[in-house]
Image (cartoon, rainbow, N blue to C red):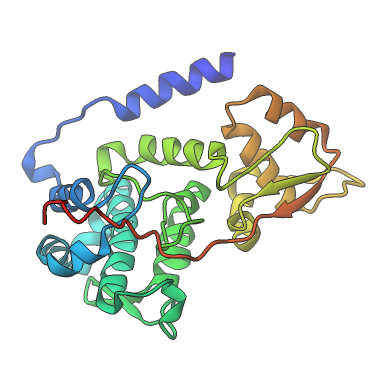
Amino acid sequence: MPRFCAALALLSLFLLPQTLPAQQIPFDHSLWDQFLKTYVNEAGEVDYARVQREPETLRQYLAAAESVIAEDFSAWPREERLALLVNLFNAAVIEIVTKHYPIKTLNEIPGVWDLPAVKLGGKNLSLNQLRQVHLVGQFRDEKIQTVLSSGAKSAPMLRREAFTGPRVEGQLYLAARDFVNDPLRNPIQPGKKHLTISRIFKWYAGDFKLDFGFRDEDDKYSVEENSVLAFLAYYLDDRAKIEYLEERRYKIKYAVFDWTLNDWKSSPGAPS
């Protein structure tokens, strides 16, 4: 209970409306926020067909990011840089999909993860570079892996709000909590012989050693597995699931990852 109260108090600070003088806000994410609220539904699905017909908002946001000068970007506060890079990753995925739409999965595009996806500070960056070098590599925060949508049904849900510097830490906290507690992505069932969790925790297991890494003597789990288990226990809301994790009487199983496009098929009568 004390930990919960402390976390709640800290989170309230992150999420309280914060205003900064215009000259102190290095980048305006309102276009991206408008885009998300227009073309993304509550399930985190994207109306790619409509975006393909109406690409202006997305293109304007990406063009604004492309105009950022490298020296200016490096001088921004940490939270402002983090917010832009997270938004850019998710925006780049949508831009790539709409260029090739209709497709069933992002993986239909040859080399999609390593091809240039966005331009920032005069440099072309791929999705893999954005994720592992410029986001997780620089900011050393495993919660980042819970906000990058990758355009797939089993990926973290795309949120309907832009990340912004003043709120990014609270937004990351909520995203991590939502992802861990999502029964579709982490179908944890107390009492089962297998603990079934997202395959993201297998692919990026090493990233969770940043804050949660440990290993006891004669432990049957690796450092990476222990890190993931500690991360899950920290963000889970269900006490029965937390106790199940702490009992450690299971084998870890990673859920099949559904790469099917998170495509929102809006109704024929929907406005466009």
